[in-house]
Length: 214
Image 1 (cartoon, helix red, strand yellow):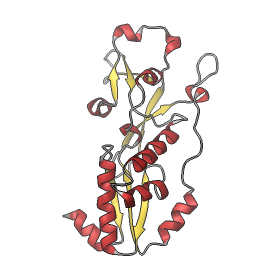
Image 2 (image 1 turned 180 degrees about the vertical axis):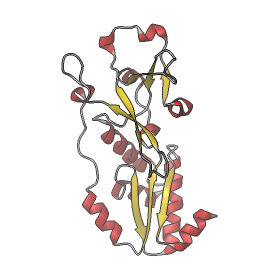
Image 3 (image 1 turned 60 degrees about the vertical axis):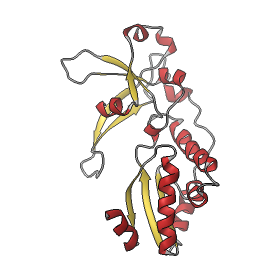
């Protein structure tokens, strides 16, 4: 949770705002999940958008999930296997890298305290939150818009985001080593336009792995 604060992904709510009409906001339950074999983040925060209120309603039951715009996973896998040289990576904290409209953050409130003896403070999450029904659509839609906005500047990377990306995972490839290295650099440049960072990069191309090590 301190990482959320440090990165500006949530902010403290004033006492006056915390006491406003509860019908105008929503609080999410949350808990920690520990994954011992994770190479990046062993502790994750999970938010429950399906938790029901006293009337039997949840935030997820009131959200639109959006139209299906996700690429077909079978198609993504088949295209990946057609390349001689491949490259895999994922976008670091993609959901949390996307801000939501200010008025909508009132439906992403939480209570949290750093220590058991401390008072409970009220916060609002400022970014797309994993665990909400609309979040997958919003994340994919942002990637598609990013690809469309910079298609002329980064044509190859834009095609990959539109065709090969599956949520935050990007499995793609080329038939020539120099093309794969160029594609990797172009993807990094395109994603940086939205302050996204590629991590967990791997490849069957020794030249690309060597460049990464350097």
